Length: 480
Image (cartoon, rainbow, N blue to C red):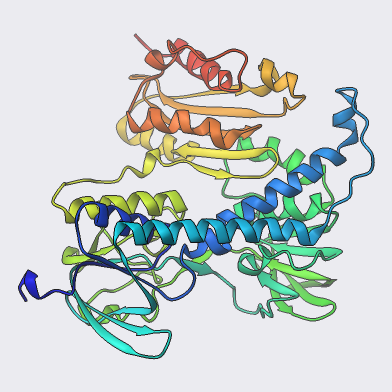
């Protein structure tokens, strides 16, 4: 098939952040682009994920702040009892979603992208089938195809979802009601953020974690200090090493609790609602990947560092995949970066992605963030490359700005090589941790060392001095 006979230069399947950035960048680079979306423009992040959840966190965070009488009294402020309107908080999130979805759609239209609403699928090399919402089925051709279909909430076996009393984060962002007692299954970032929202708005929360400890995906030092504020000081019962082996919707919701190792029944809980926050699964079913020989790994599409889809260990010409469906780092900004990198490679400009420098954040109050290697990964690298690992900790209680805010409960942990000083990773818990991590992410992206970083001047008094102090502590340990 010659290039002149293609319907499009590029077809993108999925209009989440990965697909959006790929389509926009390609169109702005002069390619004739179509994007196919089966649901709302903007995908999970805009409609059911990071955007509405952050709106809920912002509003509930204000409620928490105004209701914290002990904190306010430290400033000499005495507030009246806090009142809030659940519906207006929900409306705030919904309006934000509508605004961002509209802006995203207009951006693609202005760039000249053809928007097709329907289910997209692969129909062979450089061919895409699409069943539009009106039922019409079409076959399109493109020189290149990018798959960006994202992910959906994972619901373990034995859990029945009704969308009202038992639901996932997809429904939780609507905030349709506030249950008196809600169980949250999972204590990862989704579970923690919603526990933050619900407790701020007066709900009693039980967190059920199948692994041996609460917050298992976070750095142990961060977990130790963060759990005191985010869990122990709030109306939260946290239970680890137990499974919600069966959940039946209703009023009340029935939860069968079992030992996670032996699977032996422990007890039955009766709660008002259950949020299932047990991770996400790739949205790759129905893509007809077998038509081009692609074999997924637990539903994830294998790719190389340039975003090319891999078949039998080799890149498949003209087929690319980005975002959650690849399972690399299931974050919206990772998907966006992958989308741009895929297009750069389509254009013939060789680019690879540096996953180590991509930060992650949990928007609790206070926040948690990380970038680079975990301590366990860094120790493994140190053993294999035979260098000494450096670890320093910088505390918010020594920071003037944190003390002025009466928010000195925080920690930064920095990992680095003692031979070269190269920054390997960082983990932060504290006020505005999600913003602070970007400085370290930039340093990792540039493979900078703590000796040079320690010489950089930070504004005083700011929270950024927490990072500065970590760099300075680390630089002293470098073997010269």
